Length: 103
Image 1: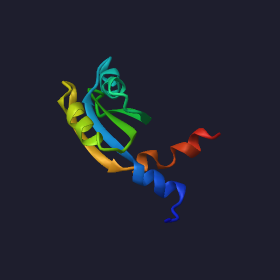
Image 2: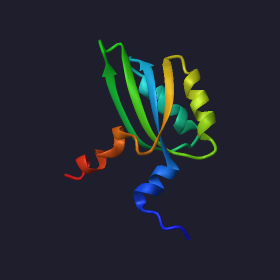
Image 3: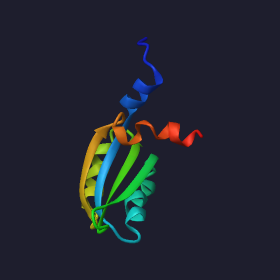
């Protein structure tokens, strides 16, 4: 059996989705609701406004399985989604957050 550490296992089994959206009340609910309705677990969520606040960027840490490509297509079809990109789980946006919340 291959010996891999916890960080490497998480990098293999998770992905970070970077989603640009129009910023208004309810947009986060629409995006995360899509995952919820399909029983697709979201491990982490981070959202911040961009520029003048008319747009936001949502990062989702999700488990990676065979459904992920289809989930990304469905997210991209949502009215307020401008774009979606997939990153490996070791993307910098979630890398040190666990230490931040241990305080």
